[in-house]
Image (cartoon, one colour):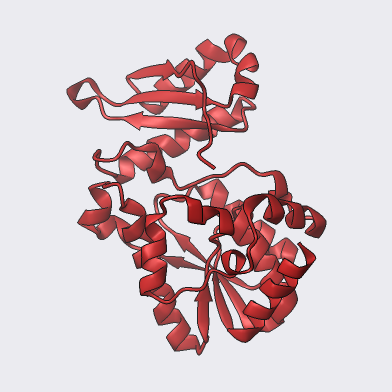
Length: 263
């Protein structure tokens, strides 16, 4: 891993000054920390803010950047104005990343940054990632991937750096809770955000609140909780259902198979 980190640092130096697409997740937090350590003021982290980003996630990401000492700015992205994104096709992430990279490209040109980097890792290459196409089209760098760093190594190095994200569960955007083909709306994203905040408040750590469109019958929630946390569910079941009903869901079901992360 030491040689891979040295390779990562070499890649960063070779393309500085750099904009770092930062979300506060495991990969981008590690990339931000290494870029800050390696490049100092020759890098800038940028967070894309939109209705699909929970307010708490934004606050946590900004707090972590302050702890790292890295410069970070927030920009507003407008993927919700794109009908292709709102239609929620299987390649929805392509339209989101295209919007992000277009905004970052304009910022890089304005501020004289030589390149843009994002947090794809080596393990991601075994998965279908529509955002990768957008990254290629905008010539966005993937330093973690190119250095050969996989998720386990990124977590290990994050631990060495003292980053709280080292053991954090993955948290894709709120739109990922809506089944493909069901339109993404701001009202749906707001319900998901409130619902997941409530479930998190009950002490659950790894879970999803899936947002199911019930037509005239109203939206339903399917709650998936990590198998290792299912043992805590039973005494909280009625409280959980009542809380999600208060959020606005007309029906709440608990997935007996629980939540299994795709990565």
